[in-house]
Picture 1: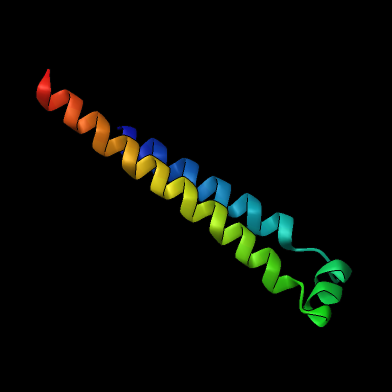
Picture 2: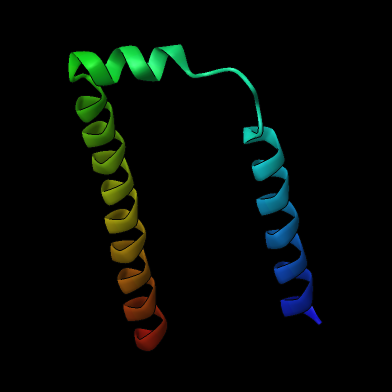
Length: 71
């Protein structure tokens, strides 16, 4: 039952994001940043933050597993 709820929520948020992206305006800021080459800096910063968060959660999971086995 929980999986069905999670799948429904995932589909709903995906559809909402698709509808939110359906705009007629062109993203001027993205075009400007892409033409200046700054978009790569933005992508690099976002990837660095995401990788850091993933590594943090992974290390935290390992520590918690170790503590659960000891106790």
